[in-house]
Figure 1 (tube, rainbow, N blue to C red):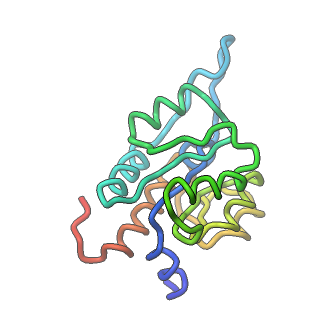
Figure 2 (cartoon, rainbow, N blue to C red; figure 1 turned 180 degrees about the horizontal axis):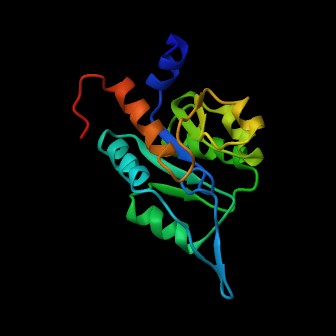
Length: 170
């Protein structure tokens, strides 16, 4: 791994993530009553909790505002949800202030056009393997895993192994 990328990862104290296409495979299941199911991967939930055990919090920044996403976030100990985020980059100053961090202390994982501006502003940016081409051109790291299939966990493990190379994390 490049030294410049390692240096970026060493500064990370907070992880932001999108939901659809990152924590899920992007699929939505609808019934006559609207959206009623999403599939989240257990590896990603454990990644959130491994980070938290090492004092790195996770927040969601998403355009959506679903009960399903909120339930998963609560169950997995997501620290804060920034929902209805149409222009996600506009939330960064508020997040920096709330956590007393600089943008270079923040990582973001996104997969689509509405993530690009925020990906360009954070200290470490990543996308799942299934992210669109425009996103892949603007990130520090492209996961081997697809969204909903452990991409978040891949980033969590990467950060934890670089920041705590000798610590038993599990």
